[in-house]
Image 1 (cartoon, rainbow, N blue to C red):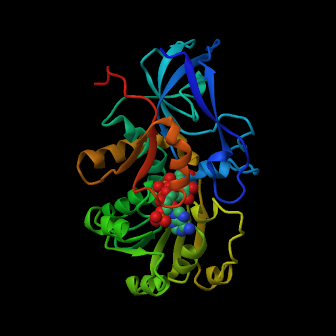
Image 2 (image 1 turned 60 degrees about the vertical axis):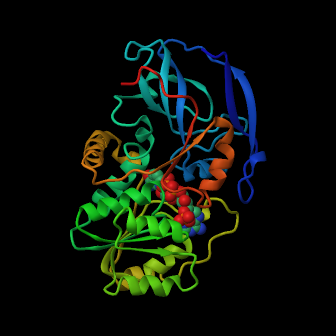
Image 3 (image 1 turned 45 degrees about the vertical axis):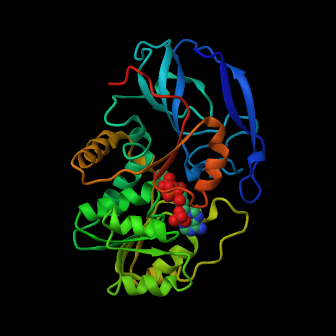
Length: 341
Ligand code: NDP
């Protein structure tokens, strides 16, 4: 085992767009687990738009990352040493190991997983993005066959799965994404009925033309101008699932005031509901089973954007926030264990 633990710490609270200098690199020694704790080694580190929000000063569903603390992040780790009877060296666990090679964590904070398909799927289709799409669309959005569904950040981790699940459930699906390459992928590979580039000047008109009868469900991953355009296309009694607002995470400029909130909600009798995927944590196995089944049947495609090397995490997160990824972006921190079946 290595004796060096590479870590990235939060050096500054970002002001405006994230910079590499907001992170500090440190080499520490590998920590030792105490009673009830487990030493784990990071295999994959998930990069999530929410990481940027956690770096700010305000609490979300978790407290802000403290200055000088290891950057927080969801990870897939391998157990190296355990002081808890439930875990053994070699076990694979999902956890919040953060931006480092090794983490000592309380055993209660680990979720043991059996390898099923590629290990990286634990952070994409079977992990937070897949679960978010599954519960957000089916439980919060309550989609029905025949409905028109619009999904933003559609070529990203959550959006690409959300759109495919809506297709699987018999909906007409329109994806919104940045640029022709992403839009082409959505329609040719993932089976979306249409895909629109929100950077086009006439995007609101194109969206209206793509949904001549209006939108039953808008799955909002971005907020801001895209939300604004979708709001005006909602059908009476339509639903908006508020999943995230990535358009405003990496800026200090306040978002422009939205027109039609709350007036249009009233006039069109709209329902708008937010959720956090952890609200459904006790049902995660149900989602895993369904998602793994669709992947195995070839009905759900998984695209991952895996970048090698922990040293690339800061730049990779900066890129994610501005659309450099297609599918789920993550860092391969260490090679997969050779004992993998
Ligand atoms: P993605 O893989 O979708 O990556 C983020 C994407 O956001 C980029 O690829 C970019 O794609 C798009 N984007 C960036 N800026 C803008 C902008 N100004 N306008 C429109 N799109 C923009 O990330 P995730 O799938 O992990 O997350 C998607 C959303 O889901 C986020 O808002 C996230 O916070 C939320 N989320 C919510 C959860 C919950 O529990 N509620 C759980 C997990 C995620 P493009 O090139 O198309 O611009």
